[in-house]
Figure (cartoon, rainbow, N blue to C red):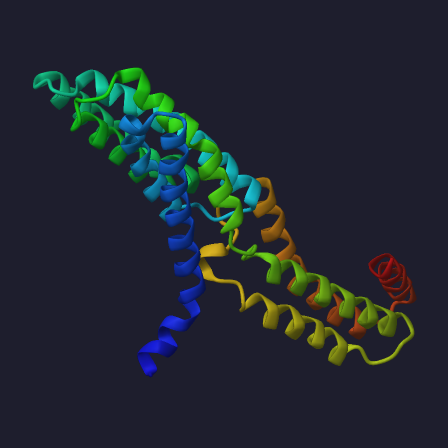
Length: 260
């Protein structure tokens, strides 16, 4: 029972990943079979499996963009693998070059890192199967793109950063009440600390994998937002201890802007 309790938080993510993979795998094979490309359908297997299981964090738009870019690159590598399939030294050189280049993918960011294994396995699978025509390999992967996009959209996880945004909104809302109390000369420490508690109680629900560390504009905005709430609470507490009427007037103005 204790082991099941430990697995429960990860179970939804695991089920989504496997559902996405099965949908992409079965759907692509059925689609390519209906289009008369059953002989080359196997070259869409690796992108279907690994791009479904290894997806980057981010919004649905980000996931769809990464899936599209990965499919196009996988089609090119499938054709490259077809060119060197059945050879000796060209295959060794191409495999070494592909592995060397893709080894730098994690340094390009989490989105590129998510494509490292799908691209490498696509090339290796194509290079190990000299049967199909070179062009058919890439066409088969590209034709499976609508299925990959549908799988990504249907099994997309909820935005893991949403609690951070909602917590900041709630904290800033309560902070507006604290600033009003400061402007009226009333005690505001409890309200300000309540705003901080509201923000932190929401922030702890953000999973570590969803923390905004990817360097995107949205991630930078979330980092700025998450740091602004504790600083605003600290500034409010300082204002409460200030006796300067000008500072209290500033607090009243800030409260009006926060409540707008």
